[in-house]
Image (cartoon, rainbow, N blue to C red; front, side):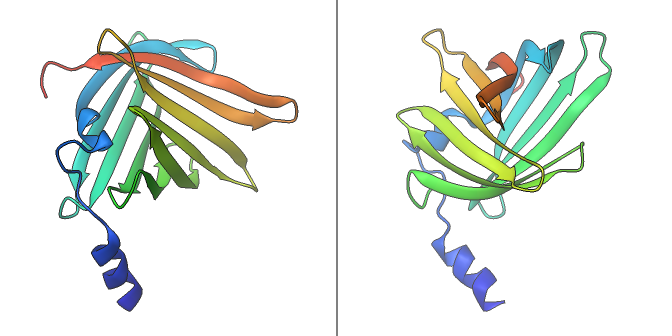
Length: 155
């Protein structure tokens, strides 16, 4: 319990000007996941007393069939770097470490027994968000998802 309370005290909130601020809200996009066309949504929201950011991700086939989903919970705003957890519909539970490089969110995630990956959330000059997910292979990093998102009108 003391460790949980200490974690609560260390966690910050996504203040105005925080790199998280530009990501908060709903995003929708199209791209590829595992070499298949996909329509996807992201939702970044404050949670747990504004001390964390939750990311909800849903990917569907173009005809609306569920393909993959996941949720991340990130302790935000202590510094430009953060830590968190990711769970998904494939049954994976990963540790996530990340940081902001300018306005770009870069994460490294994984479990050595399963796989290790990294994800990049980069704003474009047109106001979109380009997300590339990569997994570590013997010969380097291989992209398995590339999706470009725009802000959803219902945020």
